[in-house]
Length: 597
Image (cartoon, rainbow, N blue to C red; front, side, top):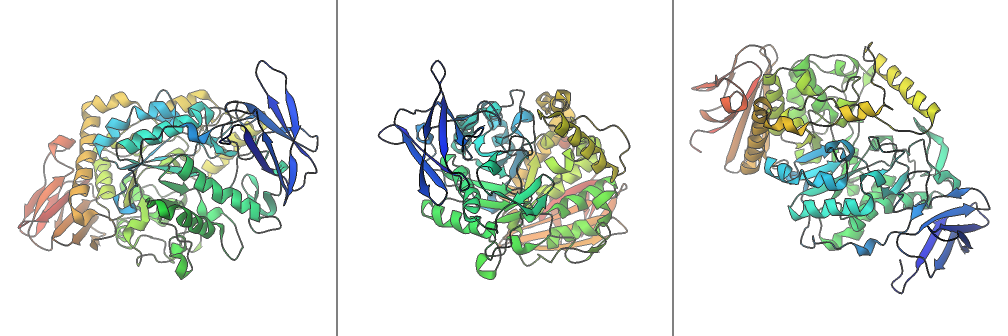
């Protein structure tokens, strides 16, 4: 939108000889206007009477109509036109908000479509008071770039600049961010730069966005290092800036960052990080760029001046896998790399379990050490969308382990030295599954997704039926049932999460990145002990993963400040401290402070 009225349209289409813009005005005749070539593959035109809300397409060399590659809104879906949006028309009220540093993040991951019965940005705001009271400090929204239909995890997005229309479009997302900022909660957005979805992807018609030199599960990968790749790189880097400037997003979670293939001298991730820092530094905002990576490689978060990519943090699945196996005993698939409590202790103390050691699952050495990096550079979870939804039946931990073990899992997550992430409903023990769901329009694609899921689960030994991803019932079953929060057992678990988060805020030793951490364990007895100290604050956490009571030695006399076995959390209050040891019931944990504190 131009200040004096009208709209400037710009599109990059280096292989086109002529580009026209076609308007579809309700109640009036359609019309087409040519854009002028401006060099370097750009075509530009100013339409004086174009306005916010009008729909348009591009036509390349007289071919079929195509949506704008940088559509801000796609109200008719991935096969429909682009709608003109005025980004300056929204009335923001968060001018004083500056975001939060990584160390202060307690992240709550959610999926907009299933988070509430309404399944929109606006209905998600209804849960804001509950999240604030719980004690989380940030939400992480699964991808919202326009995807086919109305049911999708978001990783099939094809219009990277257009917030999903069925969720409420661009203004709906702005209202959500504005509301959360008003309550001093940060908003992180999950973005997908390693691929585009298979349906409705018209980007390749405009230029060499993709290259057959780099293959993904969805086809050709991004052209980030070949001829004409400069504009492709710019497309992704500016998308990152777009979310943080036009939507005031506080950070990005970069999906499968280790799957972004780029052989350039400067990797696209480094370029993205340095560009974001350079452009947003004057605003003095805390912008957190977080990599999801299965590579166990600290290179992603090493400073740029030391040759790394300079991201603020990365997910570490090793923590999840170590805790999950210790709680459930499952050893299929990648879980075979873990077992006992030794990996739990190592994940607490050294970030990665697979840090160059031999991986039975991969049948080779895997990963690199990362213990030298601060703990606030690592995001950990015991449940997330991947680890739940990529199970055949989408089971949550609450349906796999008894209540005591569920409380133990909460404690080891929230008493860890890392940045914790909760998945929606985890805090009260939601039992509804979170399943994989799609709403593709191409029958062949739907069948391919069904068959692909079955093949994937065969490797984990799953022989039963796999819920149909295309079925609406699969989607509806994945919604949390918020009425459970008022039921006694669920309310008790939520109280534990609340009190653990409060303890995390009040004890300086539990702030990630600042404390000295000492971890020891006893494999035969199945217990782990971790001591965190920072200044005058010292907290010891003792975890019993055995199905029988255990006595855990303490380094000095201490008093219990929280026990997962307390009656208010559903336990029996069997914890006892005697001299320099603590007696823990089966599947329980306790936090202790110095007796003189």
